[in-house]
Length: 93
Image (cartoon, rainbow, N blue to C red; front, side, top):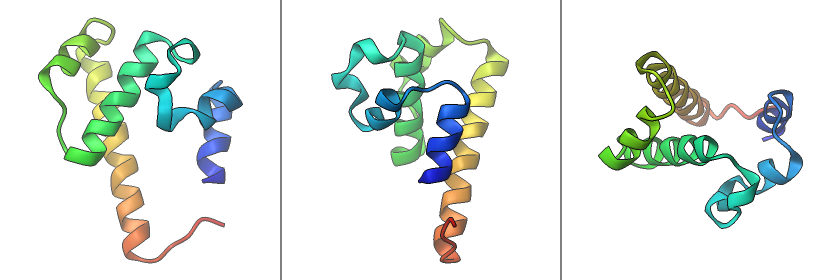
């Protein structure tokens, strides 16, 4: 978890934003519209391996096709890395 926090801080997330990710919908002022959409996208792709069409349509208003591909690959890569580490019982230092 420390690595994720450090990476979040490196890209400009505040402590309040990092601490509130799990309840982002309850803190609308802490995140931009796009940030909320990206978080929802990551949540849906992580928990269900797909995203709903309404969310996809909202993201397409903000992101190019290339950016959507990059987002999908980033989320999928993070999920794959987590699953591999879990399967191999690799814990972060």
